[in-house]
Image (cartoon, rainbow, N blue to C red):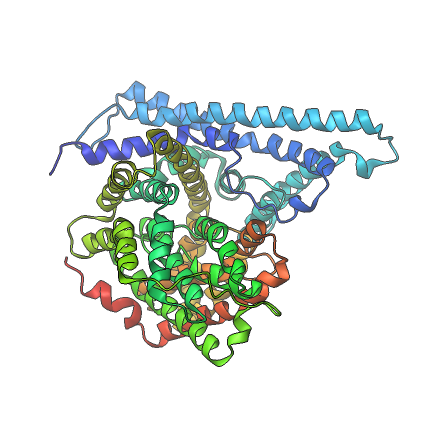
Length: 595
């Protein structure tokens, strides 16, 4: 049913949500940061460094809020309204930028004061003298501030890409939240590399980044996934899969792979799916005697949430490139089916060829873990799991048949999740739903904050014509599509070791997408390729983020986790090769969609 102004109201809500919530998310410690180096520092050093990080971070909401306030003031003065079907004074929407930045500044100041108090407390208790500078937290504050000033001073005298890259990496590896690092790098690029007069773009680019109806589906899919997770839908589906899998050696591994795929289909997240599945499935697999390394590998391989639709990676790709999100979802089904089929074949063949390799050395596999199930047991399990099993079929099938768009599907999925978990399965209370909404707020805000921070940096990349120059270079040199894809693979592979998937897509896609299109790569196929390569990076030692998630949840040594993941990384690489040789694996289903 067409309701006048509904689309506009949805976008207005998204804009307000995006700019008003980051302060809340920062207070909960949910904004993504690169803590590979800082997590290894002693607390006294980290507290001093954090003082410098938050001091410099404070510049971001001040700049964004100032230019947002100027823009809002001008809009009110000139009587500017939105031009959509539900016109309102545009200044109201723009005002969410300075208001949100005010609250964000308060949170940063609170954390700044907290770290200063800790540093002073350490100095008083330890009585650090002048000769023990390395133990003085404030030394690291000075080092960070001087490093930031040096990077900014050198920016105009270096190659723009190199200079911006060094400044951004310096901020990120110091532990600054990714969204602030991106925004500050963009603001520095506008001032030093373009023109100080372009600084108002800090606010206009941030606003433009989320003024998109297609983006409203992202927080909705995240919310639906969290409700399903907390509603114990996962447990019901896993029991069903185990009962039907039987009692052969690899049965529990196959069930884990399938439940991982199912969970990815209702969450769209990679790191989140890895943490949830590892917490539930690893104790079960280890309790049945399976090898620690193999169990870790199965968890890692089966929780590639970015590849399985509805995935936030495809949503971000579609929003940035203008490609159909629905077609990307359908393309992801082909890639996911290929990948998970190869996983199942691998663990089954391994169990047949070398059964002992499935189990921990010296362990006797539990034969009583699953009693022989009757058909009555299976039918009862099917009944209790049917509501969960129906979800991806209902959502993706509706998109495929043209019944609803991805954004509408996300709204339907949230309503469906609430009805199923609250009224049918009765595994959640209204209080649980509210808690799920708050958790969804934190995750969504983290991603949306990265989006508008990256948009500011993207304005610099666009005006410096970095992407255009790369594409022109590729055409002049005559690089083949294969050579360009190898180059992009290596870049994403390395970045995947350090950053989360959403950050990588938002930062790099505006650069690599024109390059791939210039050499004739299919846009939908490239979206799946891009996503799968990022997943490979997230599982690659020494710093793959998902490896540390599994290690943190399980307590297993990192070397054990890496060893188990290696075969599944090989399967993912094989899938990439098969997709390249037979692109219809990815493109056939989108080509048959109802238009």
